[in-house]
Length: 238
Image (cartoon, rainbow, N blue to C red; front, top):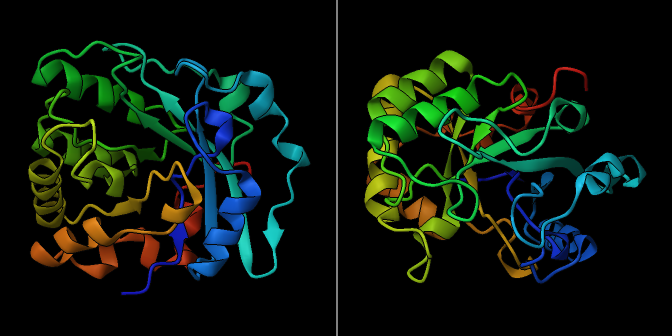
């Protein structure tokens, strides 16, 4: 299976990454990617960049030989109403937007509350990817989540970092498997993300691909395999 894109990557700018953008670009080219996404955390994550960082994306070239760079954000879901830590003034300038729940930003609710928060975030027209919906610390109703993602045209992420044996997230393997089987059942597409915080993992999806094979997940529902469909996650004003 050929994967052409990785839209969930971080650099030193996020405060807990270890590579530069230039290093990530080099790693993406070495991995044979066609599209690389820069998706730094929103400012609610300690050490994360402030709004000026995101508003200055205009200075970054978007083409590096055969590699296209997209500059987006991983906005933080801040409450159980699905509010984000970046406002429309910044989100409207992004090439694409991921929304995610992080323990440093939002307290966990019960299954129904967490699911509602994710669905409300996905209803934001700027959000096209829901990041790592796999952490057992935020239990989710996958039937409801997958159906809502299909209705909203949002891609649910299979996060390779969540499947790392030393990941701080809990229950990743079991939850990702449930997510994949539910997406397969309802024919809702997904996107694989490395969630790379160092250049050596850019474009690396080995753990995720293992579960893709185990669940016999259809390739036609994996956005990474179809670079011609990248417009499905891009901002409407691009």
